[in-house]
View (cartoon, rainbow, N blue to C red):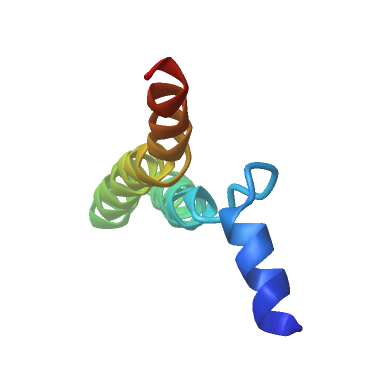
Length: 80
């Protein structure tokens, strides 16, 4: 039952759970960036900015791979 629920959440169009991973990474980077800027710690701000950028890029790539690719695949099948 748990596996079926997990599969329906991650595979359903209403779930979109996978891109959240990138958003969480980006959120952690934003927090690190804020702490580094407030504490005037240059290395922490730089690391936070890099983690934020990687998280946002990961979110976009994961969203494209898991959500948009399936939608476009189904649209291509309808056009044929």
